[in-house]
Length: 288
Image (cartoon, rainbow, N blue to C red; front, side):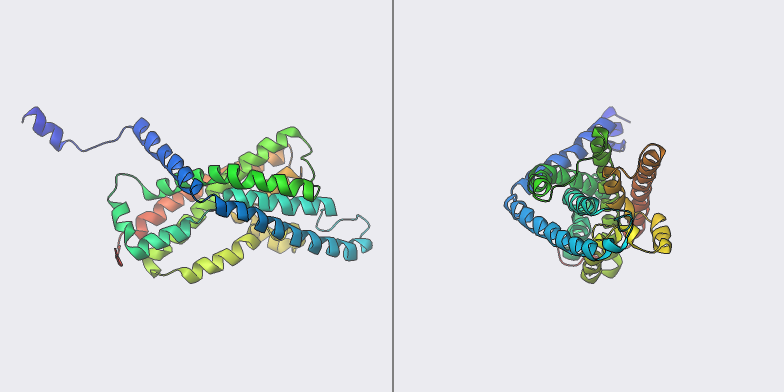
């Protein structure tokens, strides 16, 4: 067999360094894509400020009526300044980790674009994860930081009790990004079986902020509810990072929270691989 024939019969393989370069290219591509639509994120600063303002007055009224009967001056283990800080950091964090992977994947399935994605020499799950990282990098600079500039002085948000807490909070929100993205990815995979998951996406949009603790801290709920949520990944998207910021998790408890969060991030990514493998066995392309 000639050398040329041997080369033609050798299976194509991309090196590890080339794969890393390829996937990091998708981070840059996503950043530039969202940069083209940056104006809508500037308007988002206004909407997020309105969300925090609404929660500010609701919880101020709640504390005014209920804390008077409490000897500790707290509700759910939080004082009013901590509660306002909790709400603000929750929405600030949400502005960083939020993405629409489920909607994008469902659209690709419905429009037939998924057929083209499947023949390309990369893994769709990994590409979408790196695109989410690129989007979050854009959000951090063009959305999250402007929101902080507005909200922090406006509502007198408390600073973290220790300078290192800022680092651990950011690390926790980065892990939250992976968890949120993989839950979104697996939800999007339902489109292979259901074809149209708009109802599921709407239900997810309504329930996710509640399940992650953005709207109400878990300490406001009965103990059985908190126990159930401790076995699910949702609290590691918002509730855990925010309680880290508030200094509610320190020392061994902080390390444990981050390790469990890391385990969820890795575990959900691997589970997403399995869900994807099962989902694409019978692909029916609509449109195209």
